[in-house]
Structures are given as C-alpha cells and as structure tokens.
Length: 322
Image (cartoon, rainbow, N blue to C red):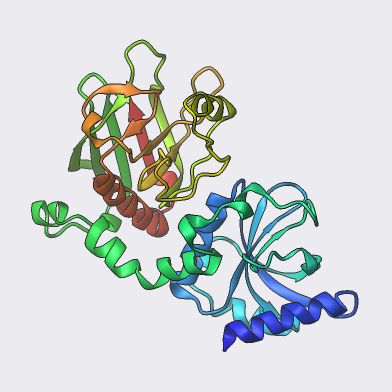
C-alpha cells in the first residue's frame, strides 16, 4: 500500500511538477551507484518508507528517503528515523527533479544528466532481477545471507564472547611475504588477535601498496567497475565486459564483498580487499595489488567491519600492508 501511494504521488508530480512542492530526506551522497545501493540497503534495513536514488548533474549519486507533501511531515519523520540515517547527518530538502526521467524498469532511479539517454547502470539486468527485486532479495533474505553465511561459525567457536563493537579500534595487518591477513581488535591499549586469514596478494614483479591506510567503504554483493584497459583485455578474449558488472555475475572479479582502501601507488588508489572467482589461487602472489580472499571469509570480514563501523565509525579501522 505504501508503495502504491508513493508512485501515485510521483506520477502526480510528473503532471503538476511546477505547482506542487514535495519534500524528501537527503541521506547519502556517493561517487557511484554501488555506494548509493549500499546506503539504500542500510536504510531499508530499519525503515519503512521508499528509498530512491538520483544521479545528479554533478555526476554524484544522492540517496533519498521518503516523499512528503509538506515540510512539517518531513521534519516529523526525520525525528523518528533509524540511527544510520541520523549518523549520516541527514536533512530535509525540497524535491525539484523532473520525474519524467524515471525509467520504467527502475522507477526509483533518476538520472538528471540525460532525459533520453539510458545510463550503463540502467541497462544492466541485475542477474535477471529488476531494481525492486534486488532490494527485496536483500531485505527479506538478509537474515539467512548475513547471519548464517557471513558471520562464520569458526569465529564464534574460537571466541564465543566476541562482540566486535566492544573494541575501540580494529586493525587489519597483511603480510604479502606470507600471504596472511590478521584482524586485530584494540581496547584499553591492549591488542587482541581476532582472526587470521590466508589471502592472495600482489605479484612479486609489481609495485605493491604498503604502509598504513584506512577503509573508505564496505560493500556486500558489490558491483564491479572495470577500467577501460580491463574491458579492452576482455574484448581480446572475445568477452564483451560491461562498464558495470552486477553482483553475482560470472565476470564480477570483486566476488562476494569488497572493502575499499586508501592506499595509493603511483597515483592509483583502486586497491581493495575483495573476494575472488578463483579460490584455488588463495595463498599465492598473483593479484595486481589487491588483497583477495575466499568469498565466505570476505563476507565474514566485511560483515564484522560493517557492524563495527556502524557502532564506532569507519575511521577507527586501520589497515597496514607490508
């Protein structure tokens, strides 16, 4: 019923956009659709109204929560939203977009850059699911996907008292000479090893990211945005790789989760901890600089980091590469 009301309001705005004011709650601003979807997933987890994404004219992606006829209604709603929306420093704003640009298959995605040209993102089929199906899948299967699969029993068995939010800081240490990653927790100036993972790191002949860094984002079921060089390489193999590869696709080399890092090598800052399509290579030096993990383990790690970041701030996660 809420969805029906939402769409009725939107189509009314198409016909009367110059006469009717509509308000929304601005939550996230991200650089790509992947980040916007990650924000949306966190919103729908604990809130009931519709969430829509706008690719603004500045090419940034804005994630909005709800649609309201009056500013008072919006202000009353923002007082009752989840802690995630509040921590994002959300605010009420007037909605002034041309809603004729809503795509039929993805009615809660608006691209303000072109009314007639479909974006690469909208042309993807999301594994045969439309935009709503993707959100439904996340919302209704979250317990089985995250609790049963992501929070691996091996951690709970090794430390049944583990509560990641009790730590003041999380530390990820990666040793490329041993292809080992250690997740540590720090509290009261004492550091404790939480979990050790076997990983794959950069090839010996390349310049690898090293030193201290931090985490910029954590994404479960990530999209992959291959570079043009990567697309050209796949083309030579007879594979037409899209500019946006959806989660679960057989060519999505991010695997089940990705954790973006701040490390930079020669001006390049595209280094991540992520899953893999070739788990038999785990434990070797064969990546282009990223840290690859088994998919069930990267989901486990990403889930723990995400839980910690929600409670303590993502800035309290440090990453040391050597």
